[in-house]
Length: 250
Image (tube, rainbow, N blue to C red; front, side, top):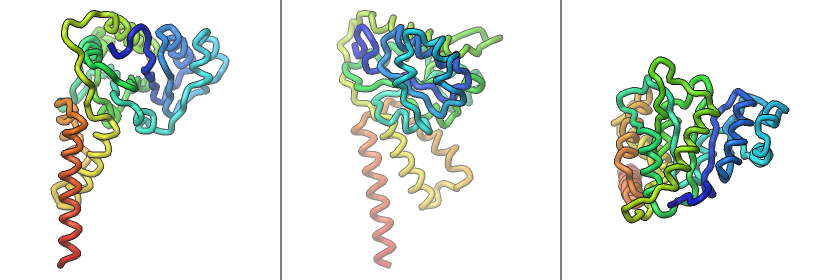
């Protein structure tokens, strides 16, 4: 198991939280489940307020030591595997997600993951489609369709409980060596791919993001390995080299 008895390599990431009580409650949950670190992206409240501290209780150290980032990319780029929680039901047809239980079972089928991150979105609107595409996998906590939205701290508590429960399960199969391309590798690759396709005229500036997102979704679905993403980047680099040298020789 990658986590064993606690979450020694797990980063819980909150994106633009608005409620100090939610932040304090999540800090307490980090203590309950022995999470490694709490990270917060562009907080929209005073995360060190008295309200947050009161809710944190024994998790106060996670508030004290939390890392604050300006954007989500910075918060996840030292992580080997990134999961994102999605509570929305208006997801477009190109998006993909699984149940929290299925995603956590899949995660725990690997031998060693140095840093695992779970992202939780804003209280009022969750994560954007572009933010969801920064994750290797997206999971959904199934609730009533009549009232699908969960309180932020409640969503975190359910996710950590289910991950803890999965980590104590005995797997019959041999654990696989982890070699998936990281979120950073995939992100950097698609910046280069988009730039190349704009250069050769395959993409147009006003529609490039939407088309690249579809391609990126395909790569994420296929569980692309580090070696495979490096091959793709090598092809892009070679095409760029050829294009640049062809211009020089004209």
